Structure formats: C-alpha cells, structure tokens
Image 1 (spheres, rainbow over the protein chains, first blue to last red):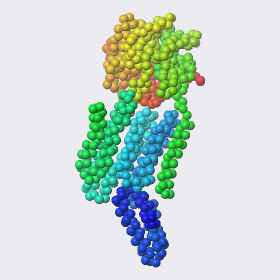
Image 2: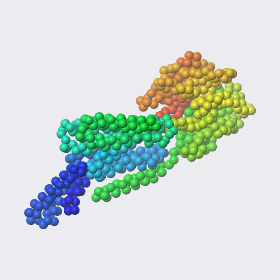
Image 3: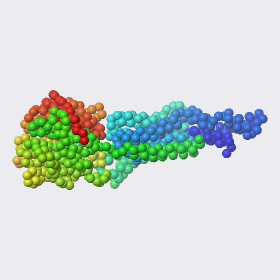
Image 4: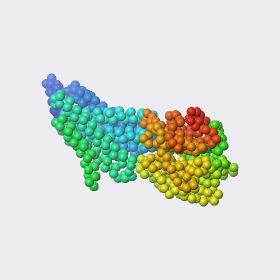
Length: 287
Length: 341
C-alpha cells in the first residue's frame, strides 16, 4: 500500500460510512492527494518529497477523520462513547454502593454490565465497523437499553436516595440509547440520497418501528416478571424472551425496508411486532 | 496510537477494572446484620413493664423496660445465631413465653427452625417447652395461666420465587403447662395463621387468617365454633390487609393495623384501626403517616402501645414504640436506653 492509500485508510477508520460511501470517499481523497502530489512534482520536488508535502498539507489523519465524521454523522460517535462509558461508570458506582453500603457483592451482574458497556464503547472506538454493520450495532444498543431497563426494575429494592439517583441516571442512559438507535437506523438508509420530505418520513417510520419494539420488549418482560413471580418453573424463563429475539431478527429486514417504503414499513413493522408476540404463544398454546 | 492498540488497551482495561472492583468488593466485608428494636412487644399484667426483642447483628435478645421508657434490662440472651422473638407475659407476670428462632444449612439448603421457650423471672431460668422440627411462630397464655395456646407451621417455604420464604400449613395447638401434654385443636393446614390471642374471660380466642382475603376468626373455646370477621372501614386497599390484631380487655373491640393511605412512592401506609366486634365497623385511630403495627392493650388503662416502622419500604426496619390513648388522640414515644453489651 502506498503512503497516500495508507493515510486515506487511516482517515476512513474514523468514519462510520457504509461500504459504498466509503469507496467513493476513498477514491475522492486518494485522487485529491495524488493531484496535490503531482502539482508538487511539477513544481520540481522529488516524488518522495512531493508525497510528504501533500500529506503534510492534508493534515493529521485523526483530526481530518474526526472532522469528517462529525460533519457527516454529527454526535453519533459521541453518543456511542456516552452510552458505553456511562454504562461502565454505572457498573462501577452501583457495584461499590452494593458492596460497601448494602454488603451485597454482585460480580455476575458487574460482568454483564461491563460487557454491555464495553461492547458499545468498542463500537465507538471502531467507528468504521458501525457503518458496515448498522444492524449489529443497533442490536448491541438495544440489548444495552433492555439491560438498563431491567436494572431500573431492581432499583425498587434499594434505599430511597440510591433508588432515585440510579433510576434517573439509568433513564437518561436509556433515553440516549434510544436516540442513538433511531439515528443509527436513519443513517443506515443513506439519507443523503433521499429527498428532504422522504427523510422526515423515514425518520418517523424508524421511531414508530422502535416504539413497536419497545411494546414487544415490554410484553416479554411483563411475562418474564409474571413467570418469575407466580411460578416455580425456571426453564421457561428463556421462552418469554423469544418475542424480543424474533423482533430483533425482523428488525434487520425493517431497517432496509423503511428507507425504501417508509409508510408501508410502518404496517409491516406492526405486523412483525404482533407476529413476534403471537407466534411463540400460539405455538406454546398448541403444545 | 493505532486502532489495534486502542482496542487491546480498552479490553485489557475493562478486564482489569472487573478484577479490581471484584477485589475491592471483597474488602467490603460480610453484612453486619440488623441491629435495632424488634416488632412485637407485650405489656406486663400490672401495666408497669414492656417486654421486647432487640437485635444485635441479626440476633435478638429479650429486654424489659418500664412502660413509660427508661433503661432497658436484659431478660434473656440466646446463643449466637439465634433470636428470641414474640414475647408474651403470663397472667401473673412471672413468666414470659417466647419463640426461639434460628437458621441451619448453607444458602440453597438454608432452613429456618423455631421452638417454644419460657423464661421464669422468679428464678431466672430459660426452659425449652417444645422442641420440634416444625416451625412455631407464637404462643398465648390462657387467663388462668395453666394452658398455653400456640401456632405451628408444617412447612417453611415460598410458593413463588419472588416472595420470601414464609411458614405455611398452620394449625393451632394447646399445651397443658403442668403435664406438658399437647393437644391439636385444628386440622386446617392453613396458608397463614397469626396473632393468636385469648379474651380476658378465657371463653374465646382470636386469630388472623387468610381465605380469599385477610380475616379475623373468633373461636369459641367451649365448642370450637368459629366466627369469621372481615372488618368494614375506609381502607386504602381494595380489601382490608389486616396486620397484628389484638382484643381489647373488655372484649368488645379489636385493634389492628391496616392500609390507611398510599404514599407518593406507591407504598401502603398502615395506621391503627379500632373495630367494634358487633358492628364490624373499623375506624382509623392513628395518624402517624408511618407504618403502624403490633398494637398491645394496657390491662387496666384505656391505652395501647404500638410499634412504628420509619423505614417500611427500606431493607431494614427501624422500629420505635409509642404509647397512644385508645382513641388515638394522645401519643408519646417510649424512649429506651439500651444497656452496654
């Protein structure tokens, strides 16, 4: 790989662009740098010197990459860092509060908390990954939102000031998480190519679709809670989460479909959501 | 720093953080256990003394204190890991019957046991009345002091994973204190049975049970006939949720605690209610806006002592005892100084 190609690659590492956009940018940046290099050669510099000069003039790849990412996908990386590090920080505070104030050590919980916070932070560090795997990143974010939602339900058992403080913290984290998912879905459909009016519809459709998802998650978690509360059968616990899993699978299709047919996809989203709840319970009923 | 290096550093950092926190958590030490006043009390027949449990690190010992408050005096202290709870004075005031409670086994296999004990204040002895693998929750003397009625549960379990383990399959028994003979009075295997108490004339006894809803049962000791009472009143819960009912000395009223309101967090606020046993109409008599429980009548005065829990919604209770007039108009906290251990 030439120095220029290497330099451009490092710039692209800081961008969450999907593959097509990435290729276009690569081409554009490489040809711009090659042009500048050629100009310096024409001015009498050696090829090596001309290349060095062109790269120097272009600027530090980290800074350029960050600036381009912020211009094309404002706040997306910051949101991911905020959610990831916020989740980890919650784990640290909550674990220490449990251990020292309530004498209750919960290393298993801490491991899950650090894992979900850590994966979102890793997505922020490897932001180029986000552009290639929008769906996977959304699944990671939704699991983070779901887990923090479950965390709120255990706050009931905490002393009052702790419950209030941690609940507010978690609600903010969940709010930011949902915003990140919606924006991420929206960007996945390449809004730069669509008309202004359609952009609004696409965004609305993503929000409605996510609201359906929250209803599915709410129903699943309600059944999970009811099962834990009123039955001694523990093997069925995983079954109550099946609607969430089905919804997440159909979400992959929805993410693509929304950008093409934003209005119709609201109907398909509703259909998938009803299906993801009805299907497992119908099968269970038949058994 | 290259991207690979960043990823490697971050993952290493998270793994280190986990182990550091886990290590730091182990310095936090085991729970110290609950320290503070217990819930149930009893008043001596001459209305001079109050007997109560006090917990030191999860183990409760029995203490007495003048009913107006003052320096508490140790009455009986259990072995480590055991608790003395639910004390009841004998009619002559010389004896106090109570329950000794403890746990055996580790974590999943943990089981709670309890047995009946009696302390004789004249010679300072603590005797085991009944040793059983079952679970005795409370006892009450007959007015002549010769018989002891008690409640025993067959199982100690939770029927659902989110409820705590509780005794179930209850029945009522009677022990002749001279011969130590035991007679089973009921064969109900009741889901719950509590707050056993005899009327001062010794004709009937009252207890609380559950049958679709909380209810009081008055049982004739002559023919075993039972009368079920569901109080009517202005409760904030759909159905009355009766806690720790007690009979007035004249046998005409029952005082118990029930849901009077719901606070801003959705927690029920329990206040004292007095019910006329004929009309079954209950009226609220306290306004502590805290969790009121365990009312006990004075024998010769128109007063009661109630237990207030200032931390009902919290993990550990914070009990204090209050004297109130029977109509609830007057109230005074009983200030108790605990002796040094």
